[in-house]
Amino acid sequence: MAIDYRQTIPNNVGLDDNRVLQRALEHWQPRFLDWWREMGPSGSHNYAVYLRTAVAVDNEGWAKYGMVRMPEYRWGIFLADPVPDRRIGFGDSFGEPVWQRVPGEHRVNLRRLIVTQGDTEPASVEQQRLLGLTCPSLYDLRNLFQINVEEGRHLWAMVYLLHAYFGRDGREEAEELLTRHSGDPDKPRILRTFNEPIADWLSFFMFTYFTDRDGRYQLKSLAESAFDPLSRTCRFMLTEEAYHMFVGRTGITRVIKRTLEVMKTLGSEDPADIRGAGAIDLPTVQRYVNFWFSSSLDLFGAEISSNAATYFATGLKGRPDEPQFEDHRALGESLRTEMPDGKGGVIAQEVPMRNAMNEVTRAAYMADCEIGVRRWNRLIAEAGYAFRLALPSPRFHRSVGAWARAHTDPLGNPIGDNEWAPRQRDWLPSDADRAFVKSLMQRVTEPGKMAGWLAPPEIGIDNLPATYEYVRLN
Ligand SMILES: [Fe+2]
Ligand SMILES: [Fe+2]
Image (cartoon, rainbow, N blue to C red; front, side, top):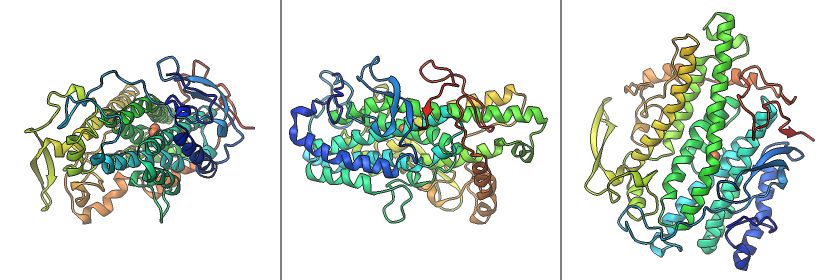
């Protein structure tokens, strides 16, 4: 179904056939806009930005580009087209028809899944709200805003489900999504990673590489859901999410490229020299990788999880790319999982597959994260340097799950508290690292100009040159 932009709330869900729902959402809309003005990208309200907007959910329609004044961006409700005769793809009800309504017995769990996903969307906008003030170029500024408006739309996607399928408590949850705020000591966002500050653009690229990729895997799991409206919503969100990860991957690539150029010119690998020349040394990049990767791993939940088992059994949340698995009931299988033994060592444990679903998804995510690391290492090798980036062990620096109780080095070797404290400086960004990276964040807004700490992009947006004036500031 095409998206109707003549309506107050653009949508492809036939909103004008359901006056009650339409009115409820039109009531929420000004609150969302207030939130955007207050908590959205700082100082952006007069900018015209070269944004893509969805006009239909098929391949041709979902990416139309044009200059948009940011607060006039048309956030709406877009679901992927229904799959005829879609069947439940996993769990105890495998093979039965999917649900168009919420079964009473699954209402609480489904609502929790939708609220948790929904909470991350505005959280990331809040985390990124000051980045525009230190953008390295107009190209990057435009990408930041593209991501921000789409995360805003992802919030709309979840709020639609809450309003349309969960009655009064759904409406209350939709209000709450605008009252929790990232990093707020009294009313924080639900998940820890979404309360971490993103104070510089290196963190932004790490976040879009690692944390938006977590989003991709969550959406893939929810796209398998027996609750069909959730599945259709997530399928469309995934098309938008891909670009967020592109921004992360190419952003980190451009940082590394620039660093390698500086290393060549100076004939030095000494971090102090690299920093002196205004670029980010590779060991600092590694520490940022360690931080954001480990924090994002927490988002998948504990290694052994009865919630995950329930979600799977009841058909609420599957595995990413569920059709590629052989046994969609996952009964009688187990997954060998390494846990701390409580005595400073590691012990392997056979976990029933349904209880290990978080681990299955986390493993798929980690393999996906490796792809970028391999590319970056190829760049470094081609430049003739021996340094290599690496993802730390999934045991490293965790605050959720079995490893939250145990310190390890980045290779996953358990270490004592006394060793952890002094070595942290080598493994995670220190205050000094963060202050240095922040010192590089100078605003560049002349079309075609680029800050000195990263290379220009290889291509522009929508076949335009990288030097195009992607944002008009007044
Ligand atoms: Fe999102
Ligand atoms: Fe995203």
